[in-house]
Amino acid sequence: MVRLPLDIRDIANASERAREDRELPLRIAVLIEPDAPEALVETARELIRPMTSAARLQIEVVMPDTQVVLGGDLDAMIALVGSASEHLTRALASGRDGYIPTVALALGDDGDAVARSLGHPVSDTLVAEDADHLVSEKLGDWLADRLSAKRLALAHNFAFMRRATAEESVKATAFQNAVIGVIAFIPGADLPLMTANQAKMLLQIAAVYGEPLGAERVKELAAVVGGAFALRAVARQLLGFIPGVGWAVKGGIGYAGTVAMGATAIAYFEHGADLGEVMHHAIAARDRAMSDARKRLRRAEAPALAPAPETTSAEGSEDPGVPGGRAS
Image (cartoon, rainbow, N blue to C red):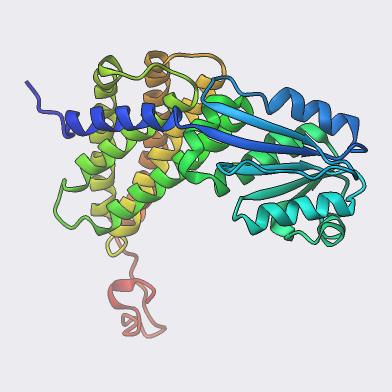
């Protein structure tokens, strides 16, 4: 029996951590100005709707004669901006003073102007002309960045957070595998690490899309191993044909293979596939990435193996400035 180049217990522990992380409690306040655009309010109402009891919203309409009292355990505060009144300005300042990640959403095209009106940081003021784009993409990216420790819980409760959270996991894992490919000096030492990272990435993506996590999921991830071996073989071939840049090739292969796998997993989960089906398509995507690597290999191999043309001077002697007939 072939021994798998990864620690199954480590992967099982990662599965359990992912399950626990997506069930973390979430507390989000949503502040609404009375004159906030109807399109923005309706879009927020539709998308910022928790899907589990672990998430709780505090909804407040910011009125001139009322004071907003924020809960003490808030993870974030989201403001839907209308006229950017002084009452909303004070509420936002209260959130910042309480070290609560606070974001203002407004329809329009001048984020700097909205930020100045509210006295709010530009980086925490999100503006777009389309309400769906503003909430599903801009707010999604902001939450994934500012609440990084609770990304899985956000994705588990709000469907619009899924893609941003999954893509962050792919980018982080691809970068890790690129670094591993660069620094691994012992032949084969990078394989178990890259394989484990890819398996954990797929578990995280599965958690993002609400897949059940357990022992059976860990067993399915054994399919990752075959592709990881193949990626390693391609990298080793490339190293032989491109002297001096082996570290770059190894890093690039690790990065490209991981991105291909992650992007395919996201695409199929988005269309309702389960982890077993996703594994099949993810490996196929990695095979295509390997095929691309082989094409690069053939292009690199041709000049490396072709005989060097001789270059002679007018007198018929070999040009001493071009050793072996090659350009320096």
